[in-house]
Image (cartoon, rainbow, N blue to C red; front, side, top):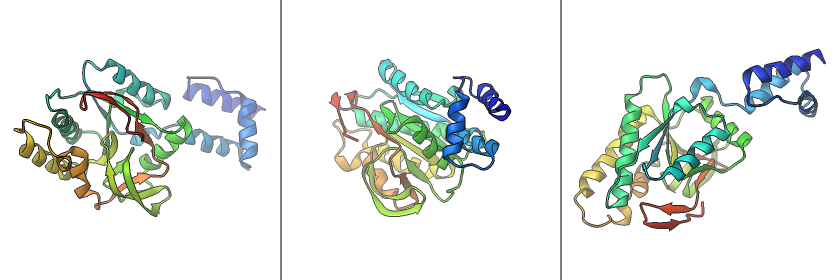
Length: 258
């Protein structure tokens, strides 16, 4: 009982969002058959909390007028207690051709990532209609599998995907991307940012004077398929999706069904 009360105190001091029931802790430890109760508690606690040492900055793209989407995005990250100081709003570029505004906005995010001086090796980029697909515990588990650096040999990890991945698992729940569109959420290594940045900047230079929406293959999430052979991965199950809402890019209600 003394140890369980100590665990209760640890939870309160380290996670002040609630005071946990020590009976529940005891049941969980017993169910998992831990021989050492303190180590058992620590193992469970880590599964439900983000690894603080490797949390990347999140750059989320948001039009100033879309306060609804801003609140939705922030509430998603609040569910997993993502540090607010690591969540950075990027004012979306308003363009008469929505796809070009989207392209410019992602370029800004990547440029901001290159300017970072922290020790984190990667950044996260999200559009403001991004949502986590799983419950909080599973979401934290999959994000921690990235933040823990257990799996090191990757350049981009898609948090959402509209397309396909290869069936072969390369590490735990990581699968190679085969043909993935939607730029709604992804994590990218800083050392790889120049590669994607060049592709997108070249695309913008080629399309910036167009009077109409560029062709399908010149959309941001189509052209990046050219790079997806180069250590791009997605988790199974997928971490996130785009929620259905009015799209300023498409000029109407959009439900991608992913």
